[in-house]
Amino acid sequence: EADIESHALWNHDGFTQTNDPEWSFALLDRGQRMVERDKNHPSVIVWSMGNEAGFGPNHTALSAWMHEYDPTRPVHYHPAENHPCVDILGPMYPTVERIIEMAGKEGETRPVIMCEYSHSMGNSTGNLKEYWDAIRAHKRLQGGFIWDWVDQAIRKHDESGEAYYAYGGDFGDTVNDLNFCCNGLIWPNRIPHPAMWEYKKILEPVYVELLDASTGRIRITNRRCFTVLDDVVGTWSLAANGKPVAEGALEWPPIEPGASALTSVPLPQYEREPGVEYWLTLSFRLSSDTPWAEAGHEMAFAQFQMPEYVRPEAETVRQPAPKATETNGRIVIESSSATVEIGAESGVLESFTAKGIERLVTEMKINVWRAPTDNDIAVIWGDRGMANKWLKAGLDRLETHVEQLENVTAESPEGIQVRAKLTLKAPDCPPALECTLDYGVDAAGDCLIAARFAPLTELPPLPRLGFMLTLPKEFDQLTWFGRGPHESYWDRKQGARVDRHSGTVADQYVPYVWPQEFGNKTDVRWVALTNGEGKGLLAQAVEGASHIGVPIMEVSAHHFALADLTRAAHTNEMKPQDMVFLYLDYRQSGLGSASCGPGVLPQYELHPKPIQFAVRLSALGGEQELTDL
Image (cartoon, rainbow, N blue to C red; front, side, top):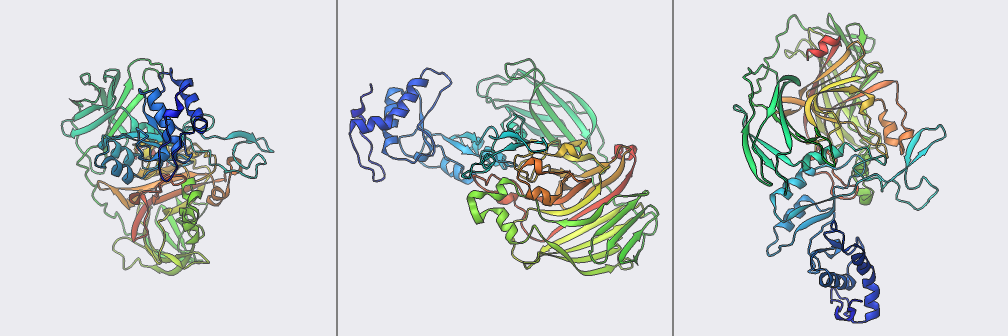
C-alpha cells in the first residue's frame, strides 16, 4: 500500500487541507488502480487524472502520488489549467490566439498539448491550417487531439427498409443529446469523412517549398522525428488547365529527421499560353509495404501554380450583339444560337435555350441560405449560434422584389442587354440586400450574368452568396476545374487538389448523420453538367474572388431541394428530386468548429459588404466541346 498519510492535500482555491488517511485513500483509489493496471504498457507515456471533473485538492494529491510512484511519466489533467501539479498544459478547444499566447508566456516551460480541439461534428474541422501554422512556429506547442475519431451512432432501418444512423432520441430516450456523439472524422462504418483528407494533408510528413519556378528548384523537409526520408519515391507532373503536359521521377538525397535538402524538378521548356494555368504537382509514395500501408500509398503531395499567368485578350464581337425585346411578360434576348428570357415580375433568368435544348427547369434563384451545419447550429451557444442569427435576419426565406427592369441594349457598349434592380427581403424582416443584375447574350449565344450586391441593413456574416439553377435530371455528369475531388470549403481546402475532376451528381452526396450543407467545391474556374452525349451547361467564373488574376467561384451540385436538406434530421428523410440543383457561389462561409469550440475565423466569414460576382453560361453540344475546355 502507498503511504497515503505522507500526501497531504494541497491547499488550493479555498479547499481545506487534510491528512485524513481514509478520505485520501478514497480519492486516490481510482487513479492508483489505473497506474497499477497500466504501468507496464510501453504505449502509455502520460498519466491523466481524468477528464472534465472539476479541480480540487483530490487531484493535487493524486498527482503527488503519481509523481512519486512513477517519476518516469508526466501527469496531465485539463481542468488544472496551469497549476504546478501537472506537467503538460492541456487546454480544451482554445482559439489559435490562445495557444500562441500560452506558448509565449514568460517563465513557462511546460509543453502545450490541446486535449481536445477542432470538434469534428458533421461538416466541420475548419481552420486546421491556422492551428498547425501556430504549432510549427512555437516550440512549446506540441499538437493536440481532434474530438473525435468516429461518429457514434447505430444503424437502423425505417419502415421501408432504408438504412440510416440513429442517435439520441431515436430509442425512446426522452433525455438525450441528439446527435452530439456524431463528432468523428469517420462514419460509424469507418469510412472517412472528407475532413480526414484535410487532416492527412496538414499532418503529412513531407513538406516542399518551390524556391525557383524557372529552374524547378525545391526544398524538401522531412517533418518526421525519428525516420530518415529514404522510404518513399517521388514523382512530378505538370498540367495545363488540368491536362497533362509532362511527368517524371523526382530524386533527392536521404534526409535526416527534421532536416531539409535541395533538389530540382526537371521541368521541360514550355511557352505560357494566354488563359492557361500551369500547375506543378509532386507526389511522395511508400516504396515498400509497411505494417500500416502497402507500397504506393501516398504519404504527401504538394502543388504549385506556376507564375506568369497570361490573361487572355478580350474577345471581339464577331457580329452585332443580339437585341432584347419584350414578349408575354418577359424580356427575350435572342441570338442565332441561343434565347434567354428574363421574367418581368421576377427579374431573374427564367429560360436559357441553346442548341435546341432548354437548360433550366425552373427560374434562377439568388441564394444566400445553406442548410445549417452542426457548427452553424452550435447548440451550446444558444441564441448566439450563427444559424439563429441567420434565421432572425430572414436569410432562409428571402424573396426577390423587382424595383426596376430595363432594356439597356442601346446604351450599353459592354454588351449588356437587360438590367434588373432587385431587393431581397424576408416577409417579416427589413430589406436585407439590394442586387443589380446585368444580363447579356453575345453572338456565340453565351449568357453573361453580372451581379452587384450591397447590404441594406445590419446583417450577420452570410451563409453564402450566389445563384441557384435547376437543370434537367439528365445533366447528371459533373466536371469541374478547381479543387477536388472531395468537398472543400474556404477554411478546409488544403487537402483538395486543383485539377480537372469529374463524377456523377449523385457521387457528390456526403451523407452526414444529421443532414446538412455538403459537397461544396472551392477555387472553381468552370463547371460543366452534361448528359451521356456531352450536351449540357457550362458555367465559368468571370468576376468575383480571384487567384493570381484568375476568377474563381464555389460550386455544388446535387439532387436535393434546399428546404428538404434544411428540415431533415436523418439521411433516410432525404428524397432526391428529378432535377439537378446547381449552386454557383461567389463564396460560402467557412466551417469552423463551433458545435463545441471556436466559430469560423473572421478571415473565413462572408461579411455583408458590396460584392461583385459574374458568371458566363454556355451551352455544350457534345463530348468534344467538353474535352476542349
